[in-house]
Length: 142
Image (cartoon, rainbow, N blue to C red; front, side):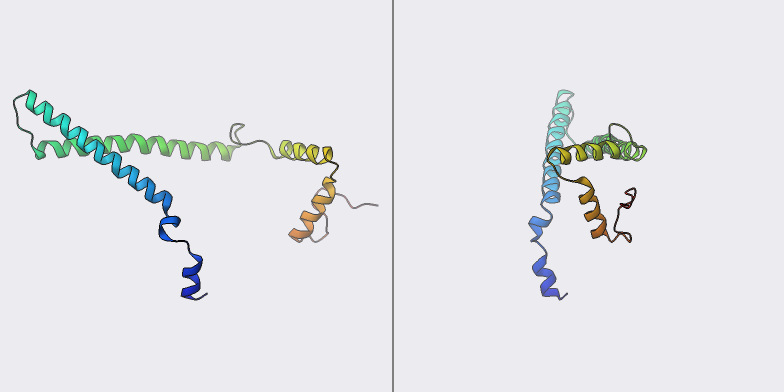
């Protein structure tokens, strides 16, 4: 594939990375909002106590609250992702239906519409290149 062909196939940057760009924009907007609101709060607290707002006192407090927030959010996200993966791996009833139950439902729907499920199984096996021409579990007709 040439570089020109590769460029023609790839979508424009904004379209290809739109989710990441929107997420980054929302992140920056919320972080700037946190910065401004916390700066106002620290300045008001300093004024109430007769002190002067200083960046040296504000920045450590701002980064501390930022990292505390991120730690909480990442811990929650990691637990959700890892917990979901773990439960899915274990075959939790909340994560999926059993394959036999889904296949039984599908067979019932096909039978209801007068479609032969065995013929579909044979076609799937044929396309997958099954050597016998029959999917596993289906005996040869005699």
